[in-house]
Image 1 (tube, rainbow, N blue to C red):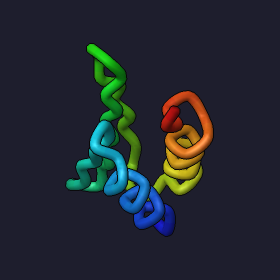
Image 2: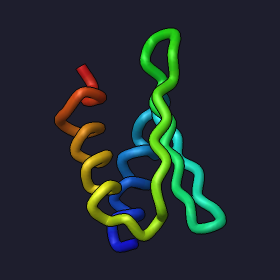
Image 3: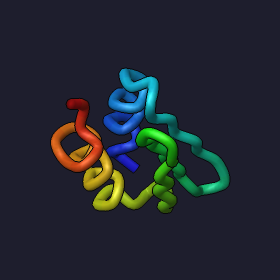
Image 4: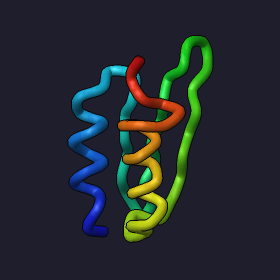
Length: 64
């Protein structure tokens, strides 16, 4: 659960990414052209959240 804040900061700076949290579930939506990629995880899954943060900053979904 420690990584939710980091993910929120990344999402807040990106108009193509948005995050939903509730009921113990975290959802991240990434708009890529004509499609949207959705990631769903438990909101206390710090490992998965960290992976998404890395993808948004440096990986497949990094700003070009």
